[in-house]
Amino acid sequence: MKIGIDIDNVISNFDYTLLNEYINHDKELRNTGIINKNVYFRNGMFDWSEEEEKDFYTKNIEKFAEKFKPINDSVHYINQLKQDGHEIYIITGRNNGEYSNPYQMTVDWLEKYNIPYDKLILTNAYNSKEKADICIDNKIDIMIDDSSRICKEVDKTETKALIMDTPYNKNTNNITRVYNWEEIYKYISNFQNKNKNKLSCAAKVLICDQAIGKIISIFLDTFLAAYFYKISEQNILYLSIYNIIGWLFATIGAFLVVNIIKCKDKVKLYRFGTFIKALYIFMIMILGEKIINYVYIIGIMYGISTATTGFPYNMIESENISNNERSRYIGFASVATEIISLIVPIFLGAYITFESYQVAAILIFVFSILKLILSFKIKNTNIQNSKVNLKEFYKIFSKDSTLKKLYAIEFFKGINRYGVMSLVVSLLIIYQSTNEFELGSWTSLFSLFTIISMFLFGKFYKNNHKRKLMSYSLIAILISFLLIFYKINLITVILYDISYYIFMNIILKVTEVNLFDYSNKEPFKTKFNTEYFTFRELFLNIGRILGYMTLLFLVGFTQNLGNLNILFVLIICSIICTIYLNLKIDFQNKENKI
Image (cartoon, rainbow, N blue to C red):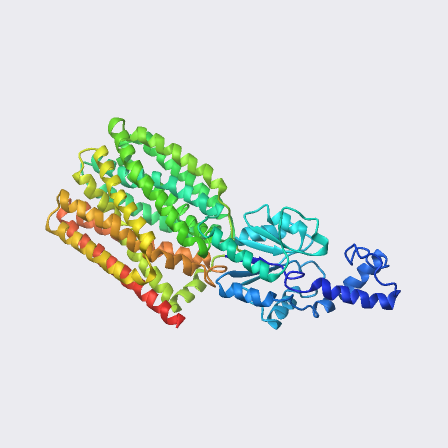
C-alpha cells in the first residue's frame, strides 16, 4: 500500500521541543511560567502578547527544527512498513514560508535518523485541502497526520485518514485516532489484510469502462469482420485494407497526441476518442452495405479513435492502478470482460440474424454513448510540465536490455494475440458458420472455455508454475496449428480456436504484468511515462501492420485461403518469441534479486 506520513508531531517531537524552548524563553522574558495549562502553548499558555509569540516563533523555528528528534519507535516501525513492501510518502506542510530551504532541511533530517521513504512532498500547512489533493493524485491508501483540518479533508477522499493524538485535536471526532507507532503499524497491517481483496473506486470505474468497451469491440471485431466478409463476397482484401489503414493511422495519431497526453489532460483526449468511436459506429449504422465503398474513411476513423482511446487508456490504467492491486484488477477485469464475451455474442448474433447489422449498430451506438458518459468518472493524474522527449527516452531504451525485451514482446503480440491472429480466429469461425446467430454461439462457447481456464489460472497459478504452464500452452497451440495445416474443417477450427481462447490468454496473462510493473519504476513513472507507452504503441502497431500486410499479400490479393498456412508459420514463430523473451526477463529479474 501507499502510506502518507506527516513529519511534525507524527514522526518528529515538534511540540515537545518547542514547548521546552518556550519555557526557557519565558524565563528570560517574564519568568511567569505556564499560566494556562488547558490551551496549546502557541495560543495563550504563557503570559505573552500575540505579537511576542509570533515574533519568537518566526525568528527561531528553523533553529528549533534542527533539534527535532523522532518520536519513540517511529523510525523502527516506518522501517518495518518499508520492509513489508509498503511505499512511504513523506507529505509535510513545511512549504509554508517559515523555512529558507524546507526541502533540503527535511531531506537532511530524514537521512540523519535513517528514515526510509519513496517520495518526499512538501505542501503549505495552512492550505488544508492541498494534502487531500496530493493523496488523490498519488493514490495514497492511508494518511497519518496530526491536523484536524487536514484529516477531515483527506477523509473525504478514498484515502483513509489516521489522526495522531495531540492535545489540540482532542475534540476531533469521526476520524480514526492513533496514539503511538506500534498502534499505527498494527492498524496498517490489519487494514491491508481486511482490504486486500477490495478494489479502489478508480479500478472499479476502469473495469466498467472495459466491460462496455468489450461489448463494442465484440461487434466491431467479430461481427463487423463478418459483415465485411459477407458484403465483399468472401474477399479478405477489404478487411486487410481496413485493418492496415486503421493501425497505420493509430500509430501516426499516437505520435501526434503524445504531447497532449503528457502535458495536458489525457482523460479529455480519451473522451474525445470515445466520441470519435461513437461517430464511427454511427457511420456504420447509416451506411449499411455501402460501407465497403468507404473502407478507407472507416479505416481512418477507426485509427483516430484507437489512437485517442487505446494509447491514453494504457497510461490512465498504469497511473490509476497501483502495483499492489494490479493482479486483482487484472483478475476482476478479465472476469467481467469474459462474462460479457460469453453472453453478448449470442445476443448480438441472434439480434443481427432476426433484424440487421444496421439495427444492431444502433444498440452499440447507445453503449458508446454510455461509455462516453462513464469517462467523466475517470480522473486524470501525473500531468507533467516537461514536453515529450523521445530522443532522450531512446537513449535510455538503447541501454536497457529489459525494456528492449518488453517492446519486442509487444511487437510479437501485435502479430499474434492483438493482431492478425485474432482476425484469423474470427474468419475461421465465420467460415464455418451459416448465419450470425451461429457465429455468436461459437464465439460465446469459446469464451466459456476462456472463463473456465482463467478461473483455474487465478485459483491455482503460482510463479513457480510459469515455465511449465507456458511450455504446455505452446505445445497445445502447436498441435492446433498442425491440425489446421493438415485440413481446415469444423473439428480442426474448433481445436484451433480453443487453443487461442484458452492457451493464448494464459500466455497473455502471464506476460502482461511485466510491462505495467516496469512502467511504475523510475525514471519511467514520473519523467518518461508518456514516452514509455508511445514506444509501446509503436512496436505493438508495427507488429499489427506487418501481420495484416502479410494477410493482404498472401490471401487478399491472391484470394487463395491455402496461403494461410504461411501466415500460420509467422504467427507460431511470434508466439514462441513472446514466451522465450518473457522467460528471459524473469530469469534476469531473479539474477538481479540475487
